[in-house]
Length: 263
Image 1 (cartoon, rainbow, N blue to C red):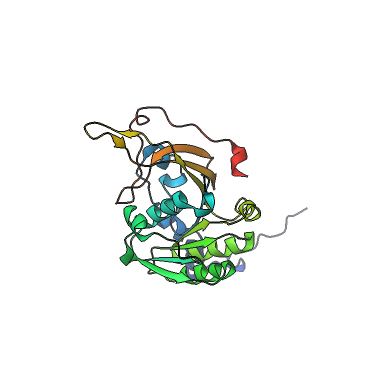
Image 2: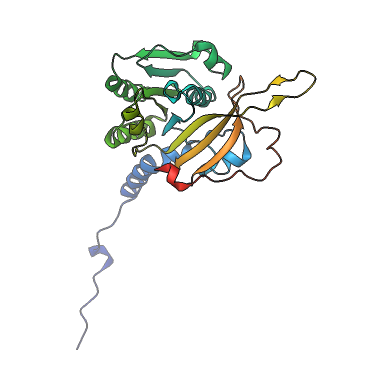
């Protein structure tokens, strides 16, 4: 029994170089944008080494939530967010509903008033559209939004908008009642979620003893491609830089937090 003749090469549809080039461009648009952006390091080896890529992903959505006493006022989380924005080049759009930001405090974290553009909304639900619109402006360094409620769908929209423009989205989760506090723990599409709380401050060394630099407990409760972990760090200086407390600088890497905290 004879085998059927093989089809000639001319009978097989050819893939032109133009088609291959078009496919490559599509792949670059889908994957290359995020890969081409260098991460934003914190400048602390133990923290940066734990984050995928060696720092905070730019052009992505990140969340910060307060965990200390009087957490509804979000003082530590606000400064933590401001310090991230400080180290990004360009103006920062800050979307909020309450006029309770303390400009000198932001400046102490390096975010000077001349870099901030404020957008005030009447209600919480009006903040997210402002954030999404701001993320389309490629000239911005970051867009900060103070929100209580954030659905999974809304967070995905913000993540996609940040990826498309390269502008970093920073959401500060705030609440004013116990019921609203529970909303901050719901899942979202944020690449990282941070929980910030004041920690005991070490006394300043001689010859001028007194209160030293403010310290925070910084919990990374969710990280895409990474594991939860906790650090005790000194708060930002005027350049937006964190630091290890002197008593901890020579210790081994600080302990991971329980995965239950990421829920």
